[in-house]
Image (tube, rainbow, N blue to C red):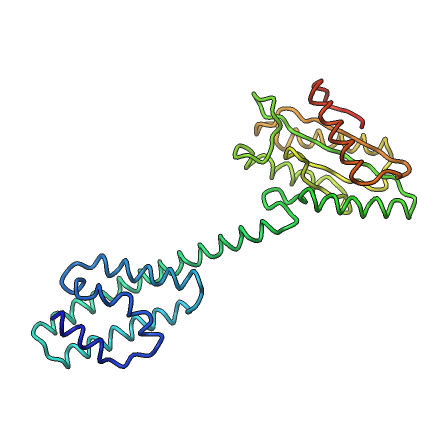
Length: 282
């Protein structure tokens, strides 16, 4: 029967798409018809997974190729007339639903891997941190530079605020580690809900947040920070962030560049954490 199966396959006129599917799985077919179906089904799934990864063939075309090739092979075996051909065809037909299911599973797995890879690549080049929705450090510096230029041209004041969060039972800042998967996104959402649409949110060096609040008074900045503190207590107070530190800076007349502003904020934050003071004006 093995020789008959090989002969039939070699003589069949299969389209390129059908033969591309059957070439790598055909060597396992004879064993499958003899009762050892696992290697055949695994080969079907792996071929489909590869197609899902590279998206070279649509899933429906793969399913059609399997069914079409199966019909052609069964017809060829019956026409060949080898002993046991009818029984082999019955087993072959019984395998088809399982093979179709494995094609769907393999193709879907390949697509999932492709989507995950593309998401990772997009996250790596994005100016926005995927987990928090805040701007990354370099992009935030660019945004701050634009605000500095705008405030200078329009004679506007500028407020800056850096905040870090301390996890319960730890003196380390709550950064972007595995333990902050719930807390940091919640904090970011709370900030967006309590800031003006033209305020900006970025990531601080240790995983906290940086805020730019243009056209705000010193008293307004202090009030905004106090309001944020209360809202954050309600939002994440029971999710492990026990202490929040604020470093604030205000410029009635903007005569400092963005890099120096951020350096001053970072220095203020280091001071706040060193003396465990919740509020520090930079």
